[in-house]
Length: 399
Image (cartoon, rainbow, N blue to C red; front, side):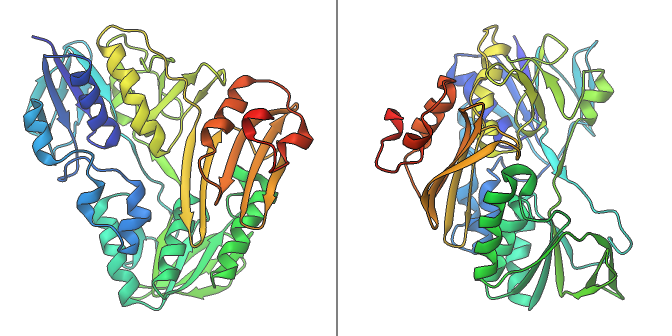
């Protein structure tokens, strides 16, 4: 009997198991995770769970009983430590498990800030459910928090802390939050939202170290100043967990390299989620996306490939955020240098990134039910009438 092993028990791993069963696979499935908890989704960790408006169980991908009901052997708290492609086995700390096909859904880990004092108590990272629950406690215990990094996680944490009544300062090396992702015009929107809610922004300055005796008490900036802090939260990106793949001899480059079918350099090994650097047939480039939608949607394609099919993953990147009174969805792919035009005003608008007169990406802020027409504009690949694009009275499907 075929035995499929899934290394990594997050959203992508659980969804791979789900789609294998949904597509008719009746062989054995083993889903292996390093955490002791059943697979859960990560967006609530910096949103509802962190703010106390959602309970931890709400983040579970499936009820725990689902795995037994669907004959998925769920192995928790025991990471895969090695993969042998010749013998087709994965190694755990206490045993070896054979496989016919293998899916790598090993995700990513927070990038550590390696500066003096980085091991002081009171410095936190957010990646796993216990991290989020601990930060909820921290918000009740302290008066001043410094967030290092003004990316999506850093800004969501800053918003949650501020709404919990904590004084918050965000430190960012770039001149604006999210500058590399959104470009200056849209990055300024997020800066203004945070400032208007009392978040202090220290922009264009780095972190040289952390200060404290028995725990962190200040953040030392690259300009020589010290920022007092009762706690620090670091959010400076993630690193894909490629070590297993690399040691096994698979192609690795900013993630595990795959084709559009999510197949790695080995015919019987697939990758999905944060760890997969997949060829995108629409964008015509390798692309690794560290967002929920990839972990949710790629597994259906990976499962098809494991079962001998030839589906391709061609969904455009999508992500969303909620910060204070700003709710946002983004679809597409564009760098910060594309031309930006805006439909609407204030904090209710749609921004479009244009390349050669064509829509490459769109971001709707407090405007809802428009992702599909924005996606259709992108996929059409046609030049758009700029005046109609920015006119709120013209339906997007008539631009």
